[in-house]
Image 1 (spheres, rainbow, N blue to C red):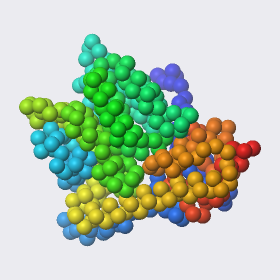
Image 2: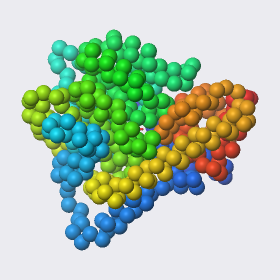
Image 3: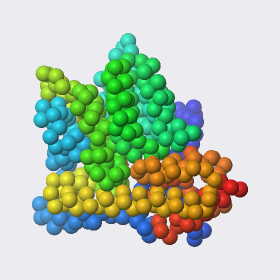
Image 4: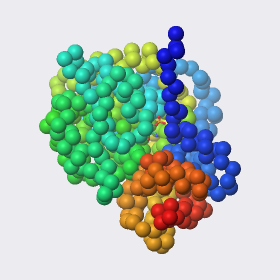
Length: 408
Ligand code: PMP
Protein backbone atom coordinates (compact mmCIF):
# COMPACT_ATOMS: atom_id res chain seq x y z
CA UNK A 1 0.00 0.00 0.00
CA UNK A 2 2.95 2.32 0.45
CA UNK A 3 5.04 1.82 -2.71
CA UNK A 4 4.22 5.40 -3.70
CA UNK A 5 6.01 6.78 -0.63
CA UNK A 6 9.19 8.50 -1.67
CA UNK A 7 12.16 8.85 0.62
CA UNK A 8 12.29 12.20 2.39
CA UNK A 9 15.64 13.87 3.05
CA UNK A 10 16.86 13.62 6.65
CA UNK A 11 16.49 16.72 8.83
CA UNK A 12 19.44 18.93 7.88
CA UNK A 13 20.18 20.26 11.37
CA UNK A 14 19.93 16.92 13.14
CA UNK A 15 22.07 15.43 10.34
CA UNK A 16 24.71 18.07 11.00
CA UNK A 17 24.68 17.20 14.71
CA UNK A 18 25.26 13.53 13.93
CA UNK A 19 28.19 14.44 11.67
CA UNK A 20 29.70 16.56 14.44
CA UNK A 21 29.40 13.73 16.95
CA UNK A 22 31.09 11.30 14.55
CA UNK A 23 34.03 13.67 13.91
CA UNK A 24 37.04 12.55 15.93
CA UNK A 25 39.16 15.67 15.47
CA UNK A 26 39.93 17.09 18.92
CA UNK A 27 39.64 20.68 17.69
CA UNK A 28 36.06 20.22 16.40
CA UNK A 29 33.55 22.97 17.19
CA UNK A 30 29.77 22.75 17.12
CA UNK A 31 28.22 26.00 15.91
CA UNK A 32 25.15 24.25 14.51
CA UNK A 33 22.77 23.43 17.28
CA UNK A 34 20.69 26.14 18.89
CA UNK A 35 21.32 25.19 22.49
CA UNK A 36 23.21 27.18 25.10
CA UNK A 37 26.69 26.02 26.10
CA UNK A 38 28.86 27.35 28.91
CA UNK A 39 32.44 28.52 28.49
CA UNK A 40 33.60 24.88 28.58
CA UNK A 41 31.27 24.02 25.70
CA UNK A 42 29.00 22.05 28.06
CA UNK A 43 25.21 22.13 28.40
CA UNK A 44 24.22 24.36 31.32
CA UNK A 45 21.51 23.41 33.77
CA UNK A 46 20.38 26.77 35.13
CA UNK A 47 21.13 26.99 38.87
CA UNK A 48 17.56 28.16 39.45
CA UNK A 49 16.28 25.08 37.62
CA UNK A 50 18.44 22.86 39.85
CA UNK A 51 16.83 24.50 42.88
CA UNK A 52 13.33 23.97 41.51
CA UNK A 53 14.17 20.32 40.80
CA UNK A 54 15.28 19.90 44.39
CA UNK A 55 12.04 21.47 45.62
CA UNK A 56 10.10 18.99 43.50
CA UNK A 57 12.11 16.07 44.84
CA UNK A 58 11.53 17.21 48.42
CA UNK A 59 7.80 17.73 47.99
CA UNK A 60 5.98 14.80 49.63
CA UNK A 61 2.85 15.67 47.65
CA UNK A 62 4.60 15.49 44.28
CA UNK A 63 3.27 12.83 41.92
CA UNK A 64 3.06 11.84 38.28
CA UNK A 65 -0.62 12.40 37.69
CA UNK A 66 -1.95 13.77 34.40
CA UNK A 67 -2.09 17.52 34.03
CA UNK A 68 -5.41 19.05 32.92
CA UNK A 69 -5.94 19.30 29.14
CA UNK A 70 -4.92 22.99 29.12
CA UNK A 71 -1.87 22.20 31.24
CA UNK A 72 -0.67 23.33 34.64
CA UNK A 73 -2.87 26.32 35.54
CA UNK A 74 -0.15 27.98 37.61
CA UNK A 75 2.18 27.84 34.63
CA UNK A 76 -0.29 29.05 32.02
CA UNK A 77 -1.35 32.05 34.10
CA UNK A 78 2.28 32.97 34.85
CA UNK A 79 3.27 32.47 31.20
CA UNK A 80 0.49 34.80 30.12
CA UNK A 81 1.83 37.53 32.40
CA UNK A 82 5.37 36.88 31.26
CA UNK A 83 4.51 37.41 27.60
CA UNK A 84 1.76 40.02 27.77
CA UNK A 85 2.86 41.89 30.91
CA UNK A 86 1.26 41.47 34.34
CA UNK A 87 -1.03 44.46 33.87
CA UNK A 88 -2.00 43.69 30.29
CA UNK A 89 -5.57 44.78 29.49
CA UNK A 90 -5.95 41.50 27.58
CA UNK A 91 -5.54 39.59 30.85
CA UNK A 92 -7.64 41.97 32.94
CA UNK A 93 -10.44 41.84 30.35
CA UNK A 94 -10.24 38.03 30.20
CA UNK A 95 -9.61 37.98 26.48
CA UNK A 96 -6.45 35.90 26.69
CA UNK A 97 -6.54 32.10 26.70
CA UNK A 98 -3.45 29.97 27.27
CA UNK A 99 -2.73 26.31 26.68
CA UNK A 100 0.42 24.54 27.76
CA UNK A 101 2.01 22.78 24.78
CA UNK A 102 4.88 20.52 23.71
CA UNK A 103 7.39 23.37 23.81
CA UNK A 104 7.41 26.02 21.07
CA UNK A 105 6.97 23.52 18.26
CA UNK A 106 3.79 22.18 19.86
CA UNK A 107 2.51 25.73 20.37
CA UNK A 108 3.10 26.52 16.70
CA UNK A 109 1.34 23.31 15.79
CA UNK A 110 -1.68 23.89 18.03
CA UNK A 111 -1.96 27.43 16.68
CA UNK A 112 -1.67 26.35 13.07
CA UNK A 113 -4.26 23.61 13.61
CA UNK A 114 -6.63 26.10 15.20
CA UNK A 115 -6.18 28.55 12.32
CA UNK A 116 -6.59 25.81 9.71
CA UNK A 117 -9.88 24.83 11.30
CA UNK A 118 -11.34 28.19 12.33
CA UNK A 119 -9.68 30.93 10.32
CA UNK A 120 -10.17 29.63 6.80
CA UNK A 121 -13.41 30.25 4.98
CA UNK A 122 -14.74 28.24 1.99
CA UNK A 123 -14.40 31.30 -0.22
CA UNK A 124 -10.98 32.26 0.98
CA UNK A 125 -7.93 30.29 1.95
CA UNK A 126 -5.73 32.60 3.95
CA UNK A 127 -2.00 31.99 3.51
CA UNK A 128 0.66 32.15 6.18
CA UNK A 129 3.46 34.55 5.30
CA UNK A 130 6.79 33.54 6.77
CA UNK A 131 10.04 35.49 6.77
CA UNK A 132 12.68 34.55 4.21
CA UNK A 133 14.76 33.05 5.74
CA UNK A 134 13.24 31.50 8.83
CA UNK A 135 13.62 28.65 11.31
CA UNK A 136 13.69 25.49 9.21
CA UNK A 137 10.63 23.96 10.87
CA UNK A 138 8.12 26.77 10.31
CA UNK A 139 7.15 25.99 6.75
CA UNK A 140 6.47 22.32 7.38
CA UNK A 141 4.54 22.94 10.61
CA UNK A 142 2.04 25.17 8.78
CA UNK A 143 2.12 23.08 5.62
CA UNK A 144 1.36 19.88 7.54
CA UNK A 145 -2.04 21.17 8.63
CA UNK A 146 -2.89 22.16 5.07
CA UNK A 147 -2.23 25.89 5.32
CA UNK A 148 -0.72 27.56 2.29
CA UNK A 149 2.59 29.19 3.03
CA UNK A 150 4.38 32.02 1.32
CA UNK A 151 7.31 34.23 2.24
CA UNK A 152 8.07 37.87 2.88
CA UNK A 153 11.56 39.34 2.38
CA UNK A 154 13.45 39.84 5.62
CA UNK A 155 17.20 39.66 5.15
CA UNK A 156 19.09 42.35 3.31
CA UNK A 157 22.18 40.64 2.00
CA UNK A 158 23.99 43.89 1.23
CA UNK A 159 23.56 45.48 4.66
CA UNK A 160 23.33 42.16 6.53
CA UNK A 161 20.37 43.75 8.27
CA UNK A 162 16.60 43.99 7.91
CA UNK A 163 15.02 44.47 4.50
CA UNK A 164 12.22 46.62 5.88
CA UNK A 165 11.07 48.02 2.54
CA UNK A 166 10.89 44.55 1.01
CA UNK A 167 8.97 43.24 3.99
CA UNK A 168 6.47 46.10 4.12
CA UNK A 169 5.99 45.98 0.35
CA UNK A 170 5.13 42.29 0.47
CA UNK A 171 2.76 42.78 3.42
CA UNK A 172 1.01 45.58 1.56
CA UNK A 173 0.21 43.32 -1.37
CA UNK A 174 -0.74 40.26 0.72
CA UNK A 175 -4.36 39.12 0.51
CA UNK A 176 -6.46 40.67 3.27
CA UNK A 177 -6.60 38.45 6.32
CA UNK A 178 -3.31 36.69 5.62
CA UNK A 179 -1.54 35.26 8.65
CA UNK A 180 1.93 36.73 9.24
CA UNK A 181 4.42 34.77 11.28
CA UNK A 182 6.63 37.15 13.25
CA UNK A 183 9.66 36.30 15.39
CA UNK A 184 9.09 38.28 18.59
CA UNK A 185 12.83 38.67 19.23
CA UNK A 186 16.18 37.15 18.27
CA UNK A 187 15.11 36.24 14.74
CA UNK A 188 16.27 32.76 13.78
CA UNK A 189 18.46 32.41 11.71
CA UNK A 190 19.51 35.99 11.02
CA UNK A 191 19.80 37.49 14.54
CA UNK A 192 18.28 40.66 13.04
CA UNK A 193 15.28 42.20 14.83
CA UNK A 194 13.25 45.21 13.77
CA UNK A 195 13.78 48.31 15.93
CA UNK A 196 10.79 49.67 17.86
CA UNK A 197 10.18 52.20 15.14
CA UNK A 198 10.30 49.46 12.48
CA UNK A 199 7.87 47.32 14.50
CA UNK A 200 5.50 50.29 14.56
CA UNK A 201 5.66 50.51 10.77
CA UNK A 202 5.03 46.77 10.48
CA UNK A 203 2.03 47.04 12.81
CA UNK A 204 0.65 49.95 10.83
CA UNK A 205 0.74 48.08 7.53
CA UNK A 206 -0.70 44.95 9.15
CA UNK A 207 -3.54 46.92 10.66
CA UNK A 208 -4.31 48.64 7.37
CA UNK A 209 -4.26 45.35 5.44
CA UNK A 210 -6.10 43.45 8.22
CA UNK A 211 -3.32 40.89 8.56
CA UNK A 212 -3.30 38.41 11.43
CA UNK A 213 -0.15 38.32 13.63
CA UNK A 214 1.19 34.94 14.73
CA UNK A 215 4.12 35.60 17.07
CA UNK A 216 6.78 33.01 17.72
CA UNK A 217 8.70 33.76 20.92
CA UNK A 218 11.44 31.25 21.62
CA UNK A 219 14.05 33.56 23.18
CA UNK A 220 12.35 35.87 25.71
CA UNK A 221 14.97 36.99 28.23
CA UNK A 222 17.59 34.91 26.48
CA UNK A 223 18.11 37.51 23.77
CA UNK A 224 18.74 40.73 25.69
CA UNK A 225 18.62 39.52 29.30
CA UNK A 226 15.57 41.78 29.77
CA UNK A 227 12.22 39.97 29.71
CA UNK A 228 10.10 43.05 29.01
CA UNK A 229 12.41 44.26 26.26
CA UNK A 230 12.22 40.92 24.45
CA UNK A 231 8.40 40.92 24.65
CA UNK A 232 8.04 44.52 23.54
CA UNK A 233 6.75 43.79 20.01
CA UNK A 234 4.02 41.41 21.21
CA UNK A 235 2.87 43.86 23.88
CA UNK A 236 2.86 46.70 21.36
CA UNK A 237 0.65 44.73 18.95
CA UNK A 238 -1.74 43.88 21.81
CA UNK A 239 -1.82 47.54 22.79
CA UNK A 240 -2.67 48.39 19.18
CA UNK A 241 -5.80 46.25 19.48
CA UNK A 242 -4.78 43.32 17.29
CA UNK A 243 -6.36 39.94 17.68
CA UNK A 244 -3.36 37.62 17.68
CA UNK A 245 -1.76 34.37 18.79
CA UNK A 246 1.61 33.58 20.34
CA UNK A 247 3.70 30.41 20.42
CA UNK A 248 6.01 30.49 23.42
CA UNK A 249 8.93 28.17 24.13
CA UNK A 250 10.67 27.62 27.47
CA UNK A 251 13.42 25.55 25.84
CA UNK A 252 16.06 28.27 25.66
CA UNK A 253 15.21 30.66 28.48
CA UNK A 254 14.93 27.84 31.05
CA UNK A 255 17.35 25.45 29.34
CA UNK A 256 14.50 22.90 29.42
CA UNK A 257 15.03 21.78 25.80
CA UNK A 258 14.13 18.11 26.13
CA UNK A 259 11.42 18.60 28.72
CA UNK A 260 9.19 20.22 26.09
CA UNK A 261 7.66 23.09 28.05
CA UNK A 262 5.85 25.90 26.26
CA UNK A 263 2.53 27.66 25.84
CA UNK A 264 0.13 28.77 23.15
CA UNK A 265 -1.70 32.05 23.75
CA UNK A 266 -4.80 33.39 22.04
CA UNK A 267 -5.53 37.09 22.54
CA UNK A 268 -8.91 38.42 21.43
CA UNK A 269 -9.30 41.97 20.14
CA UNK A 270 -10.76 44.48 22.59
CA UNK A 271 -14.55 44.35 22.15
CA UNK A 272 -17.56 44.03 24.46
CA UNK A 273 -17.92 40.32 23.63
CA UNK A 274 -14.16 39.57 23.64
CA UNK A 275 -14.22 37.50 26.84
CA UNK A 276 -17.06 35.42 25.45
CA UNK A 277 -15.22 34.82 22.14
CA UNK A 278 -12.06 33.86 24.02
CA UNK A 279 -13.99 31.38 26.16
CA UNK A 280 -15.40 29.70 23.05
CA UNK A 281 -11.99 29.65 21.38
CA UNK A 282 -10.54 27.99 24.50
CA UNK A 283 -13.24 25.32 24.41
CA UNK A 284 -12.25 24.46 20.82
CA UNK A 285 -8.54 24.50 21.66
CA UNK A 286 -9.33 21.99 24.39
CA UNK A 287 -10.79 19.61 21.82
CA UNK A 288 -7.80 20.00 19.50
CA UNK A 289 -5.36 19.51 22.38
CA UNK A 290 -7.23 16.44 23.68
CA UNK A 291 -7.17 14.73 20.30
CA UNK A 292 -3.53 15.57 19.63
CA UNK A 293 -1.70 15.02 22.92
CA UNK A 294 -4.47 14.59 25.50
CA UNK A 295 -2.52 16.61 28.04
CA UNK A 296 0.93 18.17 28.09
CA UNK A 297 4.07 16.90 29.85
CA UNK A 298 4.32 17.78 33.55
CA UNK A 299 7.95 17.82 34.63
CA UNK A 300 9.30 20.86 32.77
CA UNK A 301 6.04 22.70 33.42
CA UNK A 302 6.36 22.22 37.17
CA UNK A 303 9.92 23.54 37.13
CA UNK A 304 9.09 26.59 35.02
CA UNK A 305 6.02 27.24 37.16
CA UNK A 306 8.04 27.20 40.40
CA UNK A 307 10.53 29.68 38.94
CA UNK A 308 7.86 31.99 37.54
CA UNK A 309 5.64 32.07 40.62
CA UNK A 310 8.17 32.41 43.45
CA UNK A 311 9.59 35.96 43.59
CA UNK A 312 13.00 34.81 44.88
CA UNK A 313 13.35 32.11 42.24
CA UNK A 314 12.10 34.54 39.60
CA UNK A 315 14.83 37.03 40.48
CA UNK A 316 17.39 34.26 40.33
CA UNK A 317 16.06 33.17 36.95
CA UNK A 318 16.48 36.71 35.63
CA UNK A 319 20.04 36.59 36.87
CA UNK A 320 20.63 33.28 35.08
CA UNK A 321 19.17 34.80 31.90
CA UNK A 322 21.64 37.66 32.14
CA UNK A 323 24.46 35.14 32.52
CA UNK A 324 23.46 33.39 29.28
CA UNK A 325 22.68 36.47 27.21
CA UNK A 326 25.74 38.24 28.62
CA UNK A 327 28.10 35.44 27.64
CA UNK A 328 26.65 35.37 24.14
CA UNK A 329 26.99 39.12 23.72
CA UNK A 330 30.61 38.85 24.94
CA UNK A 331 31.30 36.15 22.35
CA UNK A 332 29.89 38.37 19.60
CA UNK A 333 32.26 41.11 20.66
CA UNK A 334 35.21 38.73 20.93
CA UNK A 335 34.61 37.22 17.49
CA UNK A 336 34.24 40.66 15.97
CA UNK A 337 37.45 41.90 17.64
CA UNK A 338 39.43 38.89 16.43
CA UNK A 339 38.23 39.24 12.82
CA UNK A 340 39.18 42.93 12.89
CA UNK A 341 42.55 42.04 14.40
CA UNK A 342 43.15 39.45 11.67
CA UNK A 343 42.10 42.05 9.07
CA UNK A 344 39.62 39.60 7.60
CA UNK A 345 38.21 41.24 4.46
CA UNK A 346 34.67 42.58 4.78
CA UNK A 347 32.61 44.42 7.33
CA UNK A 348 31.81 42.28 10.39
CA UNK A 349 29.83 44.80 12.44
CA UNK A 350 26.69 42.72 11.85
CA UNK A 351 28.13 40.14 14.27
CA UNK A 352 27.83 42.63 17.14
CA UNK A 353 24.62 44.22 15.88
CA UNK A 354 22.74 40.94 15.65
CA UNK A 355 21.02 39.54 18.73
CA UNK A 356 20.23 36.17 20.28
CA UNK A 357 21.53 32.69 19.78
CA UNK A 358 22.41 33.03 16.11
CA UNK A 359 24.45 35.07 13.75
CA UNK A 360 24.07 35.06 10.01
CA UNK A 361 27.72 35.38 9.07
CA UNK A 362 27.34 35.87 5.35
CA UNK A 363 29.64 32.89 4.66
CA UNK A 364 28.76 31.24 1.35
CA UNK A 365 27.80 27.55 1.04
CA UNK A 366 31.27 26.82 -0.40
CA UNK A 367 32.92 28.55 2.54
CA UNK A 368 30.68 26.62 4.94
CA UNK A 369 31.80 23.37 3.29
CA UNK A 370 35.40 24.34 3.95
CA UNK A 371 34.68 25.29 7.55
CA UNK A 372 33.28 21.79 8.09
CA UNK A 373 35.57 19.74 5.82
CA UNK A 374 38.89 21.45 6.53
CA UNK A 375 38.44 22.98 9.97
CA UNK A 376 35.92 20.67 11.68
CA UNK A 377 33.73 23.64 12.55
CA UNK A 378 30.08 22.73 12.10
CA UNK A 379 27.49 25.29 10.99
CA UNK A 380 24.42 25.25 8.79
CA UNK A 381 24.69 25.68 5.04
CA UNK A 382 23.14 29.15 5.13
CA UNK A 383 26.14 30.47 7.07
CA UNK A 384 24.34 30.62 10.40
CA UNK A 385 26.45 30.11 13.51
CA UNK A 386 25.20 29.46 17.01
CA UNK A 387 27.02 31.99 19.19
CA UNK A 388 26.53 29.67 22.15
CA UNK A 389 29.02 27.24 20.63
CA UNK A 390 31.79 29.83 20.92
CA UNK A 391 33.87 30.12 24.08
CA UNK A 392 37.13 31.67 25.25
CA UNK A 393 38.98 28.47 24.32
CA UNK A 394 37.84 28.05 20.71
CA UNK A 395 37.22 31.62 19.56
CA UNK A 396 40.72 32.20 18.22
CA UNK A 397 40.55 28.95 16.24
CA UNK A 398 37.12 29.81 14.81
CA UNK A 399 38.15 33.36 13.87
CA UNK A 400 41.26 32.07 12.12
CA UNK A 401 39.21 29.49 10.22
CA UNK A 402 36.73 32.17 9.09
CA UNK A 403 39.68 34.31 8.02
CA UNK A 404 41.13 31.44 6.00
CA UNK A 405 37.92 30.48 4.19
CA UNK A 406 37.21 34.12 3.38
CA UNK A 407 40.70 34.87 2.04
CA UNK A 408 41.59 31.59 0.31
N1 PMP B 1 10.77 28.92 17.03
C1 PMP B 1 12.03 29.26 16.81
C2 PMP B 1 12.31 30.49 16.04
C3 PMP B 1 13.06 28.47 17.29
O1 PMP B 1 14.32 28.83 17.05
C4 PMP B 1 12.75 27.31 18.02
C5 PMP B 1 13.84 26.43 18.54
N2 PMP B 1 14.91 26.23 17.75
C6 PMP B 1 11.40 27.01 18.24
C7 PMP B 1 10.44 27.84 17.73
C8 PMP B 1 10.86 25.85 19.01
O2 PMP B 1 11.66 25.04 19.68
P1 PMP B 1 11.11 24.06 20.79
O3 PMP B 1 10.02 23.25 20.17
O4 PMP B 1 12.28 23.27 21.18
O5 PMP B 1 10.58 24.93 21.88
